[in-house]
Length: 309
Image (cartoon, rainbow, N blue to C red; front, side, top):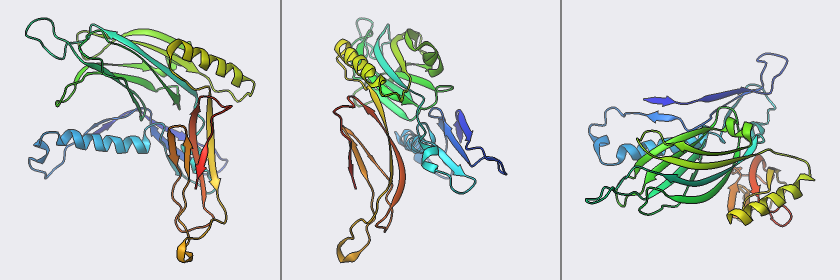
């Protein structure tokens, strides 16, 4: 079995006595390479699709546990805020514009002519994944799609783009991949590039990436709003103007259930189409969550956050 990737280890907070760090936090910067074989399984893994299904399930579990933005903190001393270690403030916001591609490989061969593909893109950054629409029967697609995500670590992390040919009923054919260092986008602020696809003989993809720094100055909100409105007028896509950081700390004196049983409470945070949940605290009327949540905000003057316990 193999598990290979770039692992980040953070010793924080530093303290003045042994072990000199309050906690160790580990995470993979990007989804790691995973390859395994199961012993004593006979020919079971020879069944069509089983190996791929198992690999996908295990990779999803690894992503949810320890691939950014997810982290695994291990406390070494008492009184360490684990939630703040798992969910620190991001280092920036990345806006992704997948513009198009040209001279892609023909995934569908024709008897007459050069063939064609039904291409789409999968964009990955850590455990976050985005997907474009499928463009039918073309080797020069124009997606013109926009995505947005927070960036947890700017140094060492990559934006990975995979291009596929959509096949009905069969496994989608790979049309090439590329990876762009987020550090280079951070240094430039904006990157507009045609990038050659790797793993294939032909094909390149057109990406436009914008880096936005985080600001806690209230006077910057109006500037960000104007930029978001301008971006929407040019692209037709609504983008965020602010970032909301929420800590659900605790509740007190919640009502008992029927037969006077203590509840097992949790909170649901609703922000537009985004729904996030705290952990469930078993059998208590006064739960302590210290649960951290992030939201991208389109209009901080009118958008609302609902918290349901």
